[in-house]
Length: 215
Length: 215
DNA sequence: CAAGAAATTGACAGACCTCTCAATTTTGGC
DNA sequence: GCCAAAATTGAGAGGTCTGTCAATTTCTTG
Image 1 (cartoon, each protein chain N blue to C red):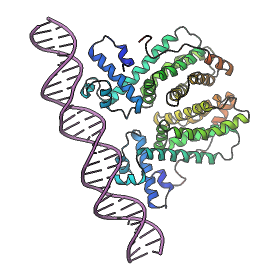
Image 2 (cartoon, each protein chain N blue to C red; image 1 turned 180 degrees about the vertical axis):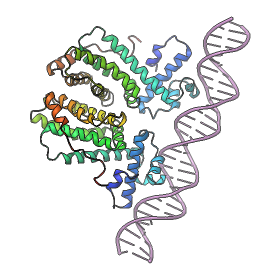
Image 3 (cartoon, helix red, strand yellow; image 1 turned 180 degrees about the horizontal axis):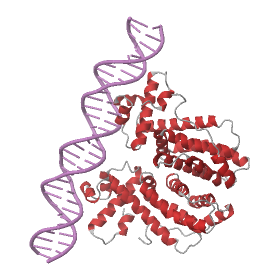
Image 4 (cartoon, rainbow over the protein chains, first blue to last red; image 1 turned 120 degrees about the vertical axis):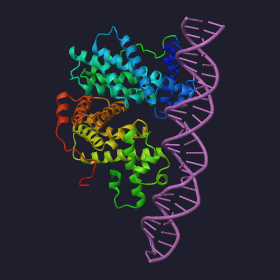
């Protein structure tokens, strides 16, 4: 039952590893029955750690929720950013980013759902995700391919459709095509002509996996 | 502290009135700190009723959540539907419906936020809201003003943007213009030309109020 | 390898929660 | 106004949860 946070800190000191185990267990439990329903006892137990140990690493559950959500968000952002490094076209970047995000968030369901739930209760997290997305929107406008005014609302709407993708994919059993279809809708929302939006969003891409290659 | 459910059942039998009071108190508490955090004791107390009385009316909290969410959704649907009775143009109907929905859901914040939170945990509620929206999308396609294929995903995306509107309006302090702007984005998503989308969604309308006229 | 530092353990106090039920009050039909 | 039926009350049994702490184990460093 080793999780992703734990794999990332192999070889580090004990304290760091225990903290990571708690975060993995938390993501697991959050996704299972919701953030609220996950008790600290249950999380500690799932992390093979006694209840008191939890309080060595986090003041309370809120702090844990924040750490998990931001940890996941940062991880996603870094991985997607790196994978897009050599894509210049804004249309491709938006489509690629959306599709990767949805698949990434769904490939480890506990992460996807933790993120989903946390976004609505952590405004700071929402802003972080939003600012990550915004750069490519501005680029597209500069290049003249997006015919819209980029403001906070637009970014929020892009985000809400992406999150809906994660929700459909993880909770409603939607298939992997959903990512491409949502990307297509997003591009149309941005004023990209339908034909181009369809083409750009359905182009085959190599999906990232949450688990580091060869775990 | 009389709520909306209670006003609606003035003069009915005691059982019905108590039930409505519990639902009002529940919406209040749900919005305050989330559905999970609202204890039955606290709800009963807020409804000026003893804890045991709660169990005369609802088996458990889930049943209450369902009753409140569906009650709110049905109420909104009926009111908006009635107010749109004489609008034929699909573009106008979508824009009008979205704007009314967002304002209605935000005018009684406890209702809006209860609805928001419940949609993500009650698939049946999501389907109900979706099916309500779908009729007008089909109409627009039939009339040739919406240049899209209407499928479940499109409906879900329309809904997610509407819900984002409620969220921004109730939790992020967004102003009343948000409704019109979201409606505009939705119309563009549906393939309506930008100029027409803007015109249709910014046309002045008379907003419904949650509270019955002259309470 | 010794010993101080750091991390972990697990029992538990105190709080709060759900749901039950016998006793009591309120309704509403006659 | 009477009274059976319906609704309400509130105490409390039985749980679960959070956060604390003295005791114990595990590091780590000289």
